[in-house]
Each structure stands twice: as structure tokens, then as C-alpha cells.
Image (cartoon, rainbow, N blue to C red; front, side, top):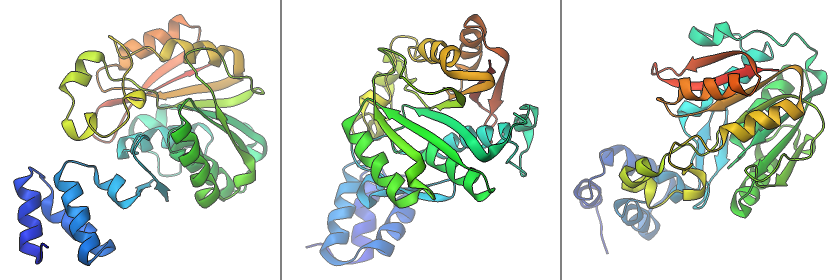
Length: 282
């Protein structure tokens, strides 16, 4: 059996883990003894830290994760912040977020959908902020994956301030528009990695995170056309479609939005200065 921090640290470093010291520190805060050794070996094999720990912090909550569900990224918090700015609930907004017009409607009866929800982190985070502001929200979290529906259900139960107001729906958004009531906004972080990029993707991601949540055809744009179509059917007048995309896809996504009839389409950069979110209004 392995013993000693140096031996465990060397194992991580030799595996190519560029954050070996930090990863070991985090694992030691959670585990000890044989369980720590097993976890270090898993990390050395390339398994993402979030899968080993079983959770990932996102926005203001801590979400359960597992293999088969995409791990939440910090960049995706820009999608949450965009939705909150649209609702007039983002007092700390800076940069491109300030260009998002306010919906200027009562937050007591907000209706929204989170398509390709994964862990549910986007929809739950937005709903919680509406509740914290004294409002109420009915949210629909939608995904094709049984694993994602299971994990997001668990996260609604443990992290949502009003879990009774969030409904989980299994549905393939590439096949048809989900049958929902009229919505104030739709958010989505769909798959957007091209087939070529998938071949070149970091092995930690490619070998461990779900292809279903990453790959989106030759252009990486497979989901945006259907999302715009559904926005036309589901959004109330003045409602918004907000999506995440790759840092080089902003202009292409904006064109899809405009061609689909959405108005005042705009691209929001993340805090790293990369195109990250596109918004269009009905």
C-alpha cells in the first residue's frame, strides 16, 4: 500500500496532472487512508476530480455529478448571469451583461425551461436566485439522458430552494419541440463540439465525459436551429432564448438566431474575453 504525501504527489505528477498539488490537497480534505490512495490512483488514471469527489461547486450551490453527466464549468455561470440580468436580478453585472435589456415583468410568476440540462445546475441556480429575490419560478429541466435526469432530480431535491416548482422531463430536443406552457425565457448549454474537435479533445474530457453531452456534428451547431424553432413556439412576446456556445461560434449562432426570426440578437463574452453566450428575443 502506498503511504506518504510525497509518494501520492509523485504518482499524480508522473501521470501528467498539471495541478497535482492542488488535487492532492482537495482529496486529502475529503478522504484518508486506503480511500485516499484509491482516489489518487483514479485521478492519476485521468478521471476528472469532480467524478471522484461526486460533486462540483457552481454559482452558489454544490451539485452532485457522476460519470455520464457533463461536469459544470465556471464559464457556464455566464449563462446564469445573463438570465438574471434579463430578469433585473444581477446587481453585480459588468461588461457585456449590461447590454442585456430588462424583461421588465413581474418575477412572481416566471416560467422557463433549461434544455439539455445535464446536472440541472443552470436552471436550479436561476430559480434559486429568483426565489432569493422574493419571486417565484416554475422551471422545466429537460434532457434525453436517463443518467442526467437522475442526477438533476437529485440536485433539485438537495439544492433547489423550492423543489416542488421544478419539473424534470426526459425528451430529445433534436427530435421535436417539448410540449410546454408559454415561457418567459429558455436557457441551454447544448452540445457544441465538432466531430473534428472531438478527435483532438483533451483525453481527460474525451475518455471520461459523455459524448452525448459534447458532440454536435461537423459544425458543432446541430442544436441551435431546433432551439431557435422552439423559442418561436414557446416564448412569450418579449421572451428570450439564451444559449452557451464555443468561443469561435458566436457569430454563427447569432446568424442562426437572426435567420430564425429572433430580434436584437447579441453575443456576451465571458470573463476571459471569449464569446460565450448568445441571446435573442421574440
